[in-house]
Image (tube, rainbow, N blue to C red):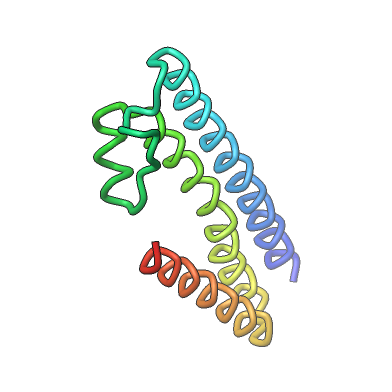
Length: 122
């Protein structure tokens, strides 16, 4: 019983660290993109278009285009709570709480499906 409580405390700390690191990384990437935007004086794209899709974002980041860097930061920010849900599934498995494992798995599936639909719809 004590070991499980220690492991749960450890998982809760891990979740907190994941959220903090995700937000910090996102903020840094967005700040770098904003700095590049101000230094370059433009988005790096014609007519200030925004890169849509993973390939366009990553190609833009490689080319150091400010809007692509900002979009990467926003993408990281969106993925942070998704990763938190995935870690929560592990926490509920450790607790042997099958109801919450099922509910959290459904939530994760809904998040992934929504992201896929959003990406497909562009």
